[in-house]
Length: 382
Image (cartoon, rainbow, N blue to C red; front, top):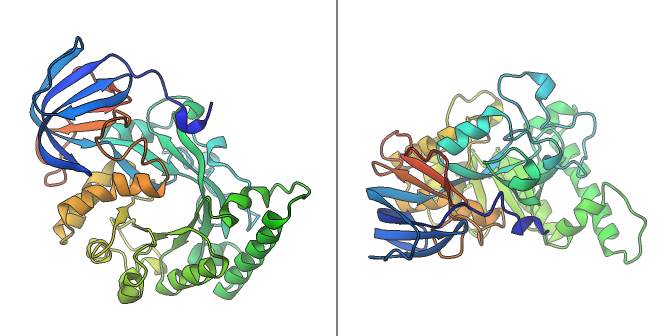
C-alpha cells in the first residue's frame, strides 16, 4: 500500500459535530457543523441534519485543523534518556543521504503524547544539522505506536545543512561546506542522468532531488548561509526550503524578491545559545511573513513541540496577521511537506484531524477542549 494512502485505522464511528466556530484556511470563518465519516471530513456546512451518526454539540467552541510543524526531530532525540537515545545525527560521515528518519523515530517517546494533546497532529521529523547532507525527512502523524502506520510520506525532503553545525562538526570552513555540497550535487546529477547505472546507496536517494521531485531541506540561520543555499540550488535548478532563517531580516529585501521560496522560521522561543542564533526572535517571524507565506517551526526538541501554539501567539503579538499565523502551522506546513491533500484545512475529503478550544486559540494560553485525529477523539471524556 502506498504510504500516502495508509491510515492508522478506519477512523472510528460516523459523527456529526454541531455548533463549532471554524477557523481554517480555505473556509470562511463562522459557525458550522462538521460531519465525520470513516476518519475523513465528509461535510462542513450550516445546519446539517444527522444521517444516523452520533451527534455532539460543541456549544460554540472554536475548531481549527490539527496543527502541523514542518521541522522537528520528534522521536529521534528521546526525552530525558540522554545520548544513548540520540539518533538524529549520523556522526563521522559528512554526507549521509541514505539515512532514513523512519528507521529511528520512536513513537513511544512521551513527546508524541505531549504534542498530540496540545493539538499538534502531524509533523515533519528527520535528521539533524551536523552533516552537509543529513538524510531523509518523513511526514508523520503524532498518534500511534508503529511508525509505519503513522507515516504520510517516509521521504518528502532531503536534509541539508550549512553554517555553524557542520562547520564545528567537521572542522571545516563555509567554503569547504559549499564545495562539499556542490561536488556531491554534481556527482548526483551525473548519476541521475545516467540511464543505465550501477546502484549506489548514497546517490540513489538523491535522484528525486536532482529531478525536482523532492526538495532539499536546508538548515541555514545566518544571512550569508541563506544566500549560499539559494545560489547553489539555483545553480542546479533544485527545489528547496530554507529552514530556520533566524537572521533573514538582515537580507529582508533580498528575500522579498524570491517569494516562491518556502521559509520555515524558528526556533524563535528561548535563549540565543550559539552565534548563528543572534537574529532569533518573534519580531523576525512577523517581518519575514510580510508579503509571503511562511511556516512557524519549533525545531523540537529545541522547543518542545507542545509549545507550537505558544510560538504562534507570540508571532501574532509582534504583528503577524492572525490568518497568516494560523496558516503557518496548518496549510503552509502541509504544503511544504507535500501532504496538503490530506491535512492542513477543514475541507471535505481531508483527514478528520481537528482541535477544539474554549477560547480563540493563540490569544490565550490554553489546553484544547478536545483533539480529534483520523475521526477519533483522543480523550472521549471531552
